[in-house]
Length: 262
Image 1 (cartoon, rainbow, N blue to C red):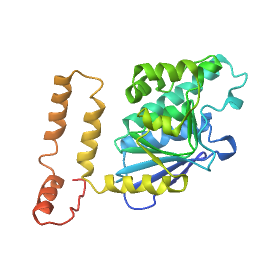
Image 2 (cartoon, one colour; image 1 turned 180 degrees about the horizontal axis):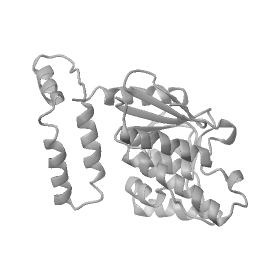
Image 3 (cartoon, one colour; image 1 turned 120 degrees about the horizontal axis):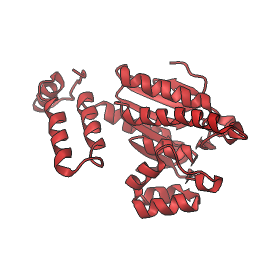
């Protein structure tokens, strides 16, 4: 899994660490990074390679991702802009459709598309020094990588309107208080805490986690009764699995389960 703008490594079995790797440009999203992210997450939709959790972070200590690369976008034609944005749209959808849980470890500035990428993850941890913003309206555009959809789901409609309309940056503490990030970490401990949570997720039944992820994803899209019907269908697919038998057996034998994803 070699990419021009991403570092992809497996720190241990079942875990994948993905690092946005343009530190000289604050890990800003250019066309190639969009293609790389689409290739990575689209490929994992087809073949998850035995992965059970992904941690997404940025190279260096300055930025998680500063958003779209405005130097590349300077004087870009309307046609070229739309073509580039179509790539970004598809990589966001690929992230959201990825069957493997994604934790964003926000190690620095997450502005514009960077914050939208963190919002497209299943949840986020942030370094205390991290900063956040959706700055698009200050540039004469608006969030277009899921920001107007995912931010209200995280922090509520009225707070999301304030963040998007003002384009003002906010702190990691505010992001935590508003429900945008799940946990604040000391800068030096961010990665170890994110990986510890990834490890805990990976220890659970992988089929169960994936089915739960799909079911939770329906919670804001369907009415309660229809969403519950989806949950029951997802649940029933787990009943005949070997993992279900192993989980109950391990509990009764007072040992750690050895899930195979079968």
